[in-house]
Length: 256
Image: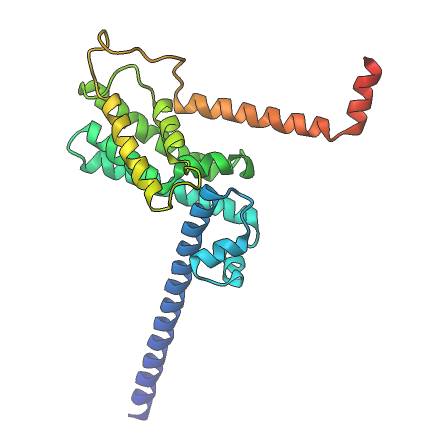
Protein backbone atom coordinates (compact mmCIF):
# COMPACT_ATOMS: atom_id res chain seq x y z
CA UNK A 1 0.00 0.00 0.00
CA UNK A 2 2.82 2.38 0.91
CA UNK A 3 4.50 1.55 -2.39
CA UNK A 4 1.30 2.40 -4.24
CA UNK A 5 0.97 5.73 -2.39
CA UNK A 6 4.61 6.51 -3.15
CA UNK A 7 4.08 5.74 -6.83
CA UNK A 8 1.06 8.03 -6.96
CA UNK A 9 3.00 10.82 -5.26
CA UNK A 10 5.88 10.40 -7.71
CA UNK A 11 3.47 10.44 -10.64
CA UNK A 12 1.85 13.63 -9.35
CA UNK A 13 5.29 15.20 -8.91
CA UNK A 14 6.32 14.20 -12.45
CA UNK A 15 3.11 15.66 -13.87
CA UNK A 16 3.68 18.91 -11.97
CA UNK A 17 7.25 19.14 -13.32
CA UNK A 18 6.09 18.45 -16.87
CA UNK A 19 3.40 21.11 -16.57
CA UNK A 20 5.95 23.61 -15.26
CA UNK A 21 8.37 22.77 -18.08
CA UNK A 22 5.54 23.19 -20.57
CA UNK A 23 4.67 26.58 -19.10
CA UNK A 24 8.29 27.71 -19.26
CA UNK A 25 8.56 26.56 -22.88
CA UNK A 26 5.35 28.43 -23.71
CA UNK A 27 6.66 31.56 -21.97
CA UNK A 28 9.95 31.30 -23.85
CA UNK A 29 8.13 30.92 -27.17
CA UNK A 30 5.91 33.93 -26.43
CA UNK A 31 8.96 36.04 -25.60
CA UNK A 32 10.67 34.90 -28.80
CA UNK A 33 7.59 35.74 -30.86
CA UNK A 34 7.32 39.18 -29.24
CA UNK A 35 11.00 39.87 -29.93
CA UNK A 36 10.70 38.84 -33.57
CA UNK A 37 7.65 41.05 -34.06
CA UNK A 38 9.29 44.01 -32.32
CA UNK A 39 12.50 43.55 -34.32
CA UNK A 40 10.54 43.38 -37.57
CA UNK A 41 8.85 46.71 -36.82
CA UNK A 42 12.05 48.38 -35.62
CA UNK A 43 14.01 47.26 -38.68
CA UNK A 44 11.26 48.57 -40.97
CA UNK A 45 11.04 51.93 -39.18
CA UNK A 46 14.69 52.59 -38.23
CA UNK A 47 16.92 50.13 -40.08
CA UNK A 48 19.21 47.22 -39.22
CA UNK A 49 21.37 49.37 -36.93
CA UNK A 50 18.54 50.04 -34.46
CA UNK A 51 19.79 49.52 -30.86
CA UNK A 52 18.92 46.06 -29.57
CA UNK A 53 17.78 47.68 -26.33
CA UNK A 54 15.05 49.45 -28.32
CA UNK A 55 13.86 46.10 -29.70
CA UNK A 56 13.77 44.52 -26.24
CA UNK A 57 11.91 47.53 -24.83
CA UNK A 58 9.33 47.39 -27.61
CA UNK A 59 8.84 43.66 -27.00
CA UNK A 60 8.35 44.29 -23.28
CA UNK A 61 11.27 42.10 -22.20
CA UNK A 62 14.74 42.68 -20.78
CA UNK A 63 17.86 42.84 -22.93
CA UNK A 64 19.06 39.63 -21.25
CA UNK A 65 16.02 37.80 -22.63
CA UNK A 66 16.88 39.02 -26.12
CA UNK A 67 20.47 37.78 -25.87
CA UNK A 68 19.32 34.40 -24.53
CA UNK A 69 17.21 33.93 -27.65
CA UNK A 70 19.59 35.59 -30.13
CA UNK A 71 23.28 35.65 -29.17
CA UNK A 72 24.16 38.46 -31.60
CA UNK A 73 22.63 40.90 -34.06
CA UNK A 74 23.19 38.64 -37.07
CA UNK A 75 21.35 35.76 -35.40
CA UNK A 76 18.41 38.14 -34.92
CA UNK A 77 18.62 39.28 -38.57
CA UNK A 78 18.39 35.72 -39.79
CA UNK A 79 15.58 34.78 -37.41
CA UNK A 80 13.50 37.81 -38.43
CA UNK A 81 14.04 37.13 -42.14
CA UNK A 82 13.04 33.49 -41.79
CA UNK A 83 10.01 34.35 -39.65
CA UNK A 84 8.74 36.97 -42.12
CA UNK A 85 9.15 34.74 -45.17
CA UNK A 86 7.65 31.71 -43.39
CA UNK A 87 4.57 33.71 -42.37
CA UNK A 88 4.00 35.11 -45.87
CA UNK A 89 4.52 31.73 -47.57
CA UNK A 90 2.02 30.16 -45.18
CA UNK A 91 -0.52 32.86 -46.02
CA UNK A 92 0.06 32.34 -49.76
CA UNK A 93 -0.89 28.66 -49.40
CA UNK A 94 -3.96 29.54 -47.31
CA UNK A 95 -5.07 32.16 -49.84
CA UNK A 96 -4.75 29.68 -52.69
CA UNK A 97 -6.79 27.09 -50.79
CA UNK A 98 -9.50 29.33 -49.33
CA UNK A 99 -10.15 32.29 -51.64
CA UNK A 100 -13.11 32.06 -54.06
CA UNK A 101 -10.93 32.83 -57.10
CA UNK A 102 -7.30 33.47 -57.96
CA UNK A 103 -7.61 37.27 -58.00
CA UNK A 104 -9.05 37.32 -54.50
CA UNK A 105 -6.28 34.93 -53.42
CA UNK A 106 -3.69 37.34 -54.82
CA UNK A 107 -5.37 40.33 -53.15
CA UNK A 108 -5.57 38.53 -49.81
CA UNK A 109 -1.92 37.50 -50.06
CA UNK A 110 -0.75 41.03 -50.90
CA UNK A 111 -2.68 42.62 -48.03
CA UNK A 112 -1.22 40.08 -45.60
CA UNK A 113 2.29 40.59 -46.99
CA UNK A 114 1.80 44.31 -46.44
CA UNK A 115 0.95 43.69 -42.77
CA UNK A 116 3.95 41.35 -42.43
CA UNK A 117 6.18 44.18 -43.76
CA UNK A 118 8.10 41.78 -45.97
CA UNK A 119 8.63 44.45 -48.61
CA UNK A 120 10.39 46.72 -46.10
CA UNK A 121 12.23 44.16 -43.97
CA UNK A 122 13.70 41.75 -46.53
CA UNK A 123 15.42 44.33 -48.80
CA UNK A 124 16.87 45.95 -45.68
CA UNK A 125 18.24 42.65 -44.34
CA UNK A 126 19.42 41.27 -47.69
CA UNK A 127 22.98 42.51 -47.20
CA UNK A 128 23.05 41.22 -43.60
CA UNK A 129 22.19 37.58 -44.37
CA UNK A 130 24.54 35.08 -46.08
CA UNK A 131 23.60 34.55 -49.72
CA UNK A 132 24.10 30.79 -49.37
CA UNK A 133 21.46 30.22 -46.66
CA UNK A 134 19.96 27.01 -48.07
CA UNK A 135 17.02 26.84 -45.65
CA UNK A 136 15.94 30.42 -46.33
CA UNK A 137 16.45 29.98 -50.08
CA UNK A 138 14.20 26.91 -50.06
CA UNK A 139 11.47 28.84 -48.26
CA UNK A 140 11.80 31.78 -50.66
CA UNK A 141 11.52 29.43 -53.64
CA UNK A 142 8.34 27.96 -52.17
CA UNK A 143 6.89 31.45 -51.81
CA UNK A 144 7.90 32.46 -55.34
CA UNK A 145 6.17 29.36 -56.71
CA UNK A 146 2.96 30.13 -54.78
CA UNK A 147 2.85 33.74 -56.02
CA UNK A 148 3.52 32.59 -59.58
CA UNK A 149 0.72 30.04 -59.29
CA UNK A 150 -1.75 32.67 -58.03
CA UNK A 151 -0.82 35.14 -60.75
CA UNK A 152 -0.97 32.62 -63.60
CA UNK A 153 -4.31 31.26 -62.38
CA UNK A 154 -5.76 34.78 -62.17
CA UNK A 155 -4.54 35.52 -65.69
CA UNK A 156 -5.96 32.25 -67.03
CA UNK A 157 -9.30 33.10 -65.40
CA UNK A 158 -9.27 36.46 -67.17
CA UNK A 159 -9.11 38.36 -63.88
CA UNK A 160 -5.63 39.95 -64.10
CA UNK A 161 -3.94 41.63 -67.04
CA UNK A 162 -1.62 39.29 -68.91
CA UNK A 163 1.36 41.67 -69.10
CA UNK A 164 2.02 41.49 -65.35
CA UNK A 165 4.78 39.22 -64.02
CA UNK A 166 5.62 37.97 -60.54
CA UNK A 167 8.40 40.52 -60.11
CA UNK A 168 5.83 43.31 -60.44
CA UNK A 169 3.98 41.92 -57.40
CA UNK A 170 7.17 41.79 -55.33
CA UNK A 171 8.27 45.32 -56.27
CA UNK A 172 4.80 46.75 -55.61
CA UNK A 173 4.92 45.32 -52.09
CA UNK A 174 8.37 46.81 -51.52
CA UNK A 175 7.23 50.26 -52.59
CA UNK A 176 4.00 50.17 -50.57
CA UNK A 177 5.44 48.64 -47.39
CA UNK A 178 8.16 51.16 -46.63
CA UNK A 179 7.03 53.52 -43.86
CA UNK A 180 6.19 57.09 -44.79
CA UNK A 181 8.21 59.96 -43.28
CA UNK A 182 7.59 60.80 -39.63
CA UNK A 183 4.88 63.27 -40.68
CA UNK A 184 2.46 60.33 -40.57
CA UNK A 185 1.47 58.54 -37.36
CA UNK A 186 2.36 54.87 -36.87
CA UNK A 187 -1.36 53.99 -36.86
CA UNK A 188 -2.27 55.96 -39.98
CA UNK A 189 0.62 54.72 -42.13
CA UNK A 190 -0.59 51.10 -42.55
CA UNK A 191 -4.16 52.26 -43.14
CA UNK A 192 -2.99 54.42 -46.04
CA UNK A 193 -0.83 51.59 -47.38
CA UNK A 194 -3.82 49.22 -47.53
CA UNK A 195 -5.91 51.89 -49.24
CA UNK A 196 -3.19 52.41 -51.84
CA UNK A 197 -2.87 48.66 -52.31
CA UNK A 198 -6.59 48.53 -53.13
CA UNK A 199 -5.95 51.16 -55.81
CA UNK A 200 -3.07 49.08 -57.16
CA UNK A 201 -5.19 45.92 -57.20
CA UNK A 202 -7.78 47.78 -59.28
CA UNK A 203 -5.01 48.51 -61.77
CA UNK A 204 -4.03 44.83 -61.88
CA UNK A 205 -7.48 43.75 -63.05
CA UNK A 206 -7.80 42.56 -66.63
CA UNK A 207 -8.95 45.25 -69.05
CA UNK A 208 -8.98 45.70 -72.78
CA UNK A 209 -5.23 46.25 -73.13
CA UNK A 210 -5.74 48.04 -76.43
CA UNK A 211 -7.71 50.72 -74.60
CA UNK A 212 -5.48 50.88 -71.53
CA UNK A 213 -2.06 52.40 -71.06
CA UNK A 214 0.70 49.85 -71.79
CA UNK A 215 3.20 49.15 -69.04
CA UNK A 216 6.57 50.84 -69.44
CA UNK A 217 9.95 49.29 -68.71
CA UNK A 218 10.96 45.64 -68.82
CA UNK A 219 9.25 42.76 -67.01
CA UNK A 220 11.26 40.69 -64.51
CA UNK A 221 10.21 37.54 -62.69
CA UNK A 222 10.96 37.10 -58.99
CA UNK A 223 13.85 34.77 -59.85
CA UNK A 224 15.34 37.36 -62.22
CA UNK A 225 15.02 40.09 -59.59
CA UNK A 226 16.85 37.91 -57.07
CA UNK A 227 19.67 37.35 -59.57
CA UNK A 228 19.92 41.08 -60.28
CA UNK A 229 19.93 41.89 -56.56
CA UNK A 230 22.58 39.25 -55.88
CA UNK A 231 24.81 40.60 -58.65
CA UNK A 232 24.38 44.13 -57.31
CA UNK A 233 25.31 43.06 -53.76
CA UNK A 234 28.38 41.19 -55.01
CA UNK A 235 29.44 44.21 -57.05
CA UNK A 236 28.97 46.57 -54.12
CA UNK A 237 30.95 44.26 -51.82
CA UNK A 238 33.78 44.01 -54.36
CA UNK A 239 33.84 47.79 -54.71
CA UNK A 240 34.08 48.27 -50.94
CA UNK A 241 36.88 45.70 -50.69
CA UNK A 242 38.82 47.42 -53.46
CA UNK A 243 38.35 50.87 -51.90
CA UNK A 244 39.59 49.65 -48.52
CA UNK A 245 42.75 48.03 -49.97
CA UNK A 246 45.52 50.68 -50.10
CA UNK A 247 47.80 48.37 -52.06
CA UNK A 248 45.23 47.95 -54.80
CA UNK A 249 44.74 51.71 -55.02
CA UNK A 250 48.47 52.41 -55.13
CA UNK A 251 48.98 49.73 -57.77
CA UNK A 252 46.24 51.24 -59.91
CA UNK A 253 47.79 54.72 -59.62
CA UNK A 254 51.17 53.29 -60.57
CA UNK A 255 49.76 51.61 -63.63
CA UNK A 256 48.10 54.89 -64.65
